[in-house]
Image 1 (cartoon, helix red, strand yellow):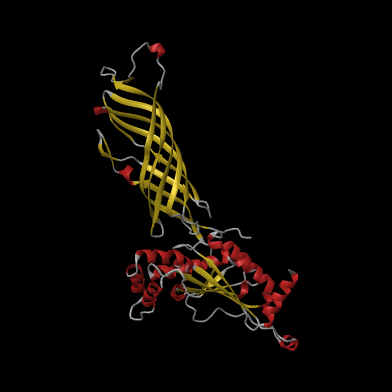
Image 2 (cartoon, one colour):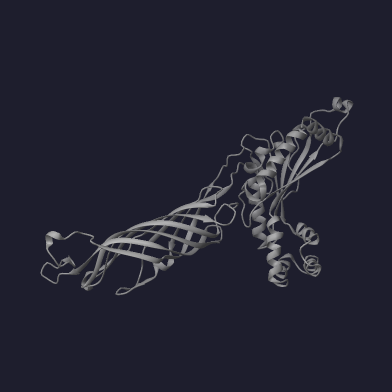
Length: 428
């Protein structure tokens, strides 16, 4: 192995401007870098080994271009690329030990050229489909926004889904090139003078030059300000269940069940933790109608999408347990109070709405057990309610009746808000 390493160093040092190439990927619409996505962790290890084998002193430059897949609005994709570029110091720079001052990160935008290259080389699509797609990509009479529309609508839905899975998901990446200095003769080394530190690239509107600094600060040449940045991610979300907010209850009509949901999102995990609280406390004593419930639900979700975004989204499975106490009365002759425990399994879908808001929808089914007592209005001078019990008062025991329920236990269509925070990840 030592011989192989020496040969690798010799190869790079004796070939003018030799290059090593690496790619690290992102998920759709996301700027946070996750190490488990598409073998990013393995590629990072290879990148670190290459830098070490070449030797930071033998590296001329490390040029990084940030790309987004060519779908969705152009302005969003440009902003997404910039945010991905801002992620580079915390996500990748620690793997480039000794060569931090050689790094320049540039916003490349939408990866149209790479899409064309991949489609032209595709071995799974039929030739006629490839020609159809290439004709759209090569049409100079349309702009890129129209091109996106044509690709989504003029080819078959099956082929479009194929493109999204086979190609588009690989077009969100850091493109990393390590350029090695040409070998110098001993005489040239003696004549060399210390080089001045090179400034950031001129006229680079969307270039981020990563400077050698303890906290990996980097210069945004677009704004001409140097600032230390940290990636952001959603760590918590709150929401309210819309069907609960507008609910029809017999005897009450249209009313509301106040509800609150809190979701905690651990970093770099498909799993989240959460709690729901419902507390309707409505009462109409004049008609003997009561709807008073205190319910708390603890749950966990497992999202199907790879956790490579700063926020969770897409389909998920959910399991929960809940505890409740209640007092419900529909008239003078029908009322119940008690406590209960339940457990459910369900599935749902979380849809981001812009950067901060989201819709969350789903359905759960399970079992609920309750110990309760019926009660009735006494219709006497006390105006009290009494347990609906006939027998010797000495034999009465509270919560002497049981309820078992199996079936749908929860439906939700929630509107919520994500809370972001700066996230400094630990690296190897």
